[in-house]
Image 1 (cartoon, helix red, strand yellow):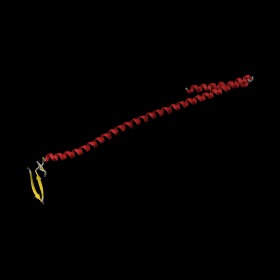
Image 2 (cartoon, rainbow, N blue to C red):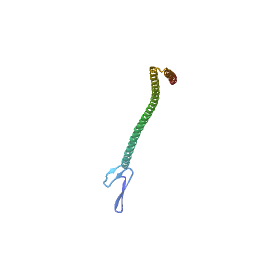
Image 3 (cartoon, rainbow, N blue to C red):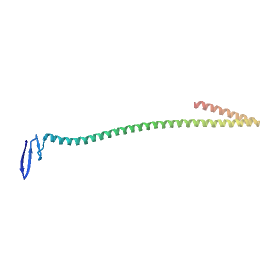
Image 4 (tube, rainbow, N blue to C red):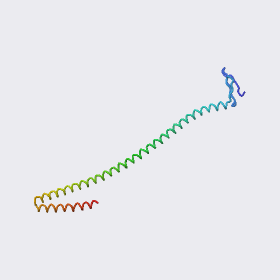
Length: 153
């Protein structure tokens, strides 16, 4: 049935046609079906391996996308922190300038109070020359501080 047998060296050898395949147990399989089945199994193994590789690559790609998103969020937060630090530095400088102004005003107030106390003491001692001199000094100081106050605004 599409196969011829010959005896070579004491062994029986079968030559098959392409349409059928016979085994020593006389079971018949179509050669095309048998070859297709073998190729299909091989393809299935390759295909499954390739599918695993593709799934692995997809999973890795998805993980890379997630990592990229996380890195972008970190960059955005770092920018926000940088902006806040810059704002804090500006506010610190502003507060430092205001503190310096208040300190200078406090020193000027203390100087005026000292002069006023000395004027009161000179008047109590009936020292009109000292009283006139201290009063003139206080007036000059008041004029300077008013000019300084106007210049600072």
